[in-house]
Image: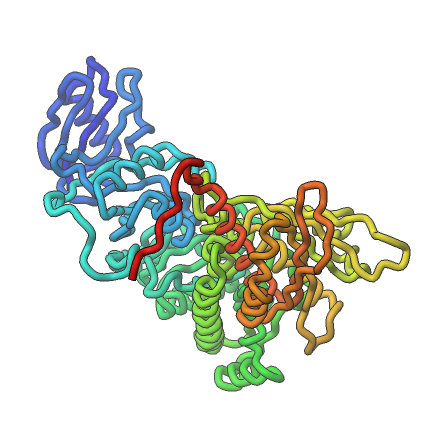
Length: 583
């Protein structure tokens, strides 16, 4: 895979021109340039040289007024199921990439390629030729976080025996091994997404950690087989900058220890006298389990490692910053041991949450929980603002017929006293919540001076409903509208066509009783309702968050069945009904 195709070549270009360009950019080649009208070919000694030529030259270097396009030269017979995707945003997560690729078919393998660029490169193999072609057409040139993706075929040596792969789950059963120092996405972890180590370091030490022309950071990534992102542009002017380390737990710990040693040496050299503690960033979802009952887990780590550990208060959290700072004080060796123990607990919590999430995604039909970005796998790797963005095209299998999820309206009733907390100062919280969930969220006027409850009107597809309602339930708990041992239970109303109400109730109330037993929510279709102007009636659902969600999804599933039956063509008026079979 080391032969290159060079396109958009000027008629004036010569072999000597290409020799000069490759020499100027220090790109080795193992044979002469074969220059044709409008294009050229050349062989590189290895894949690394070929990738460097593509990264450095394609779309960037001009020859006789034309910008060169460089990609792998692939014979037609080998243009089958394998693609290379370049210029992937450096902080894009595997879950997002997986969702994007899976839109076009079954992904049999996705291996990261080691490059010297800031952006990431992956080689992808689809299950079928037409899937790869569709992915190529749709993704090439498409924008992801202000980066234009570049997609090209790469030789598929197994092009002849095309067909589904044997064994393994659909998707990612052939990830390549981790590549040392690989930028971009980081090595594909053993599980869905190994949680990275996030650190905060004083801004004045960032230069020392990077080193002259990036030499120090490259050396760390090479020695620890890790991928390290220093988020220099985040929080301009802040006293501290976050660092994200993607690797195995051992690689993360080794990189962390090395960074602490570099900061210590720089402190001595610059006569910086203040103590430099280790600061770890962790999603709030994990912190309670890290602390343990009555603080036992944290106390044990302190005792075992000889360190002092403190955790930033809950008040510092916002919708867009769900991370808390764990500050570890002690000698470097002690801090390193504490980091290992802290991250071990956090990874255990993460794995537990992922297992619970997968269970819930099976329980709740018509909802793609992996597309929600609510779970900390997203927030840990690239900051919470991106974690809430579902992968393109990753929609739940909800009741829709045009491919896009149908918008739903839910009326959620909250304590009247909680309205201020949901709206926030100058409406900031409700605006952030609406943006975060991708839903329209409005609070209806009070129905009277003494109204005990207020109605929140939420409009959006299933994933938006899930996210918006989840945050509202969570906010009421955080703001102490429910007691410390009391579960948040709210009432939600959804409207259904009056002709479908009977289907929700079922014969003799059978369906609604089954719904209540399955979901643990109370489901009521009030009798003697007068349908509204749209010929709809109300279904009332009461319960804790997941009970409410499951009931809502089940009811929407029933409505989808009703709609499908309505859309089926009716038999012609003259057609005879089928005769019963004689026994």
